[in-house]
Length: 433
Image 1: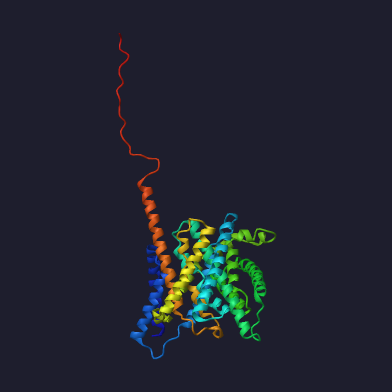
Image 2: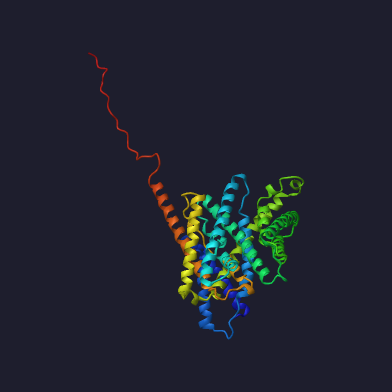
């Protein structure tokens, strides 16, 4: 089964099918992620019933690598879309506030549900609840392309901030629990120390980003874009080894190169920037990140579909816990959006899917912190449930928009059917008496 040519054939077919899924998603509003998970499940059934290998193949290492690369590409892709202009500051601040409050409240309620269901201690319950509370930019960004520009922009900002903040919260909780379990090998400094680490990461990210742009704008080679990707992957990995918030490095670099005129607008930096050359890097990077994110996302969710244990979905306990968490997600979201945005909050309320980062962080829980009582089916149930709810809302919104367009076309504003003018003969008053 794992012969090189067989792998190439299967991989190529999966990418072709994924492209078709993407086109279907645009027309039906069904997230392509759901289709990819189903494809993975079907492949797993084929492996189990047709091929039946002597030893089950371990796909998890591939899932982990794909998840990390996918995470980097998705955050970079989102950062390249963010324009830092004065008129954008309020929408960005609002999206940040909604993402932060939504993440904290959703994590808190989900943690209380998990504490009750699995008798976890508080910090561990928060650790498990965090991945379940992060919005999936991998699903949201491709799904909102047809929305009104301001709503689309809000979802891009919100999902990106949710990713970043959720990952920071997850690794803070993970580090705290590891420090409590093994204080000799894991240092824990609390929230203040972790905030200092984030500040240090931002400073390092800015310095590294300036250096990268100034160096790469002078490179004439045609392979510099993949070289740039390699540098970013290197910085991310080294940052992880140094216990920095590495995703901030990717976010800062994306923001800097997408807003070069702003970041290079002062002092000697203005003279050092070769805008045309740097702009070519930005445009090429945009294409590469989109295409790489597509490939990585495809294989990630197919492999997730292969390794998931479907039998866990049959558990009533899994269904009850998952439904409770999903209900809390949308209740909290409704209250926050009603306060922050007002009545014009459809379909935003229902666009809250969980996806790649939820899976990636769940499998990133350190072995010594794994709770054996936790049922993995909750993960799949919430991903599918939130995606289906988003699908329904997007279809309803599209239908509503189509009805509005048809009404507008049917009744032209300020017009009326043309009729021929009637000629009225005037009575002759000029006859002589």
